[in-house]
Length: 76
Image 1 (cartoon, one colour):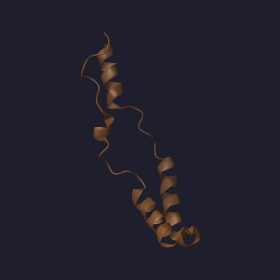
Image 2 (cartoon, helix red, strand yellow):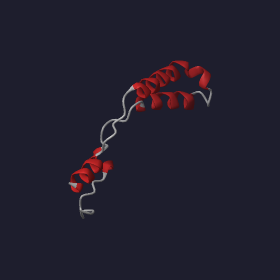
Image 3 (tube, helix red, strand yellow):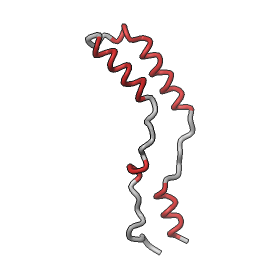
């Protein structure tokens, strides 16, 4: 069977979900900007960002995409 024309789906269109840790990152960068690049005054925001990043590393990653399933189904 080969490739089917029009079976490719752009996964960027499905990426409308909220990105993880964006609020913490924006908060930290805003604090650093307000304090003239002195991140020692932003320990609270830095800790929140690090906590969020550590939590994201523990979450299982999604392995299959819609393109994977379309290719798998087109082989049958």
